[in-house]
Length: 230
Image (cartoon, rainbow, N blue to C red):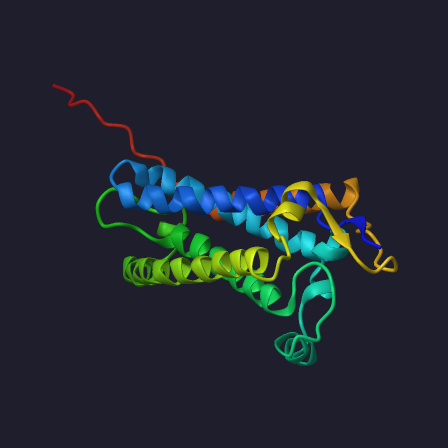
């Protein structure tokens, strides 16, 4: 007999859909270029904040949001590929995709903070490194854009395949938080209370502040112009 359980808590769901919206906005803003690059930089900082929050939430959040719950072992991957894996939450390949996407988004957002476009945009940490290093990081940031497209495409395709071919809807639980399972012994998600939420938000906020240049020394004051005595 099927019964519903809480699978994804609200912070996990909000972080997921906010990241979707932010990544889409980052792609649009970089394609527009020009003045939109200032917004691209702000969006990158927001992406960093969401990713850091999700990483911390993967430690202190509720049951199925935790990395200890879904990070796969080689045995779990083999079982999944053979069709023997049984579980809820991220399947082994989905877990690898999630970790890869979070790592890539964190790296892209951090790289963007050191990058520049040789025209008008300079990341908040541009002055923390040499112009040569900033140029090298900028090149990596631009090249990794194609990796972002590839991973996002694979992720979306996998979700669609599970939903429409395997008839295992992965989208609805990420909206409602609830999944219907066959095994009555599978417990609902627990943990991730208010204290954990405050800790995760505080760490994410500190990360955004630091990458925004909060740890850099203030710029030297500009000397006041002197008026000739004559």
